[in-house]
Image (cartoon, rainbow, N blue to C red; front, side, top):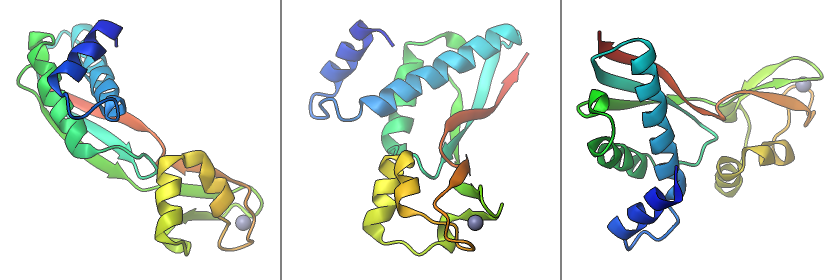
Length: 155
Ligand SMILES: [Zn+2]
């Protein structure tokens, strides 16, 4: 996203300041990717974009959806009437020591810890341990990204 664009968004939403820039930048990149895809696939119209949100991501969905709605107005026509659907992907971990797969529900954690993990996925290693062998050495195998699952359109 260009600086000029970012300044424009700020002007349109004077009370938001810069704190929602993440959602706007993300919405902008989703639209860019979808439009690129439509060109590659020679779509005449994009009718729906399904977006996956990882559980470990700290993104305000309402702001994100609002940003998408606003941004498609000035974007390529191919996406101007598209719907956007958000699908949630639960976080999944795999222990490097005993190979157990586990998720956040299986681990006891306080609300504050959960918030912190959402804010910084890397912090998961500080707070979480394998429920079986108690090792803090695990891979995050799902739930940390935001990506387009699929795009529905007319060719
Ligand atoms: Zn383990």
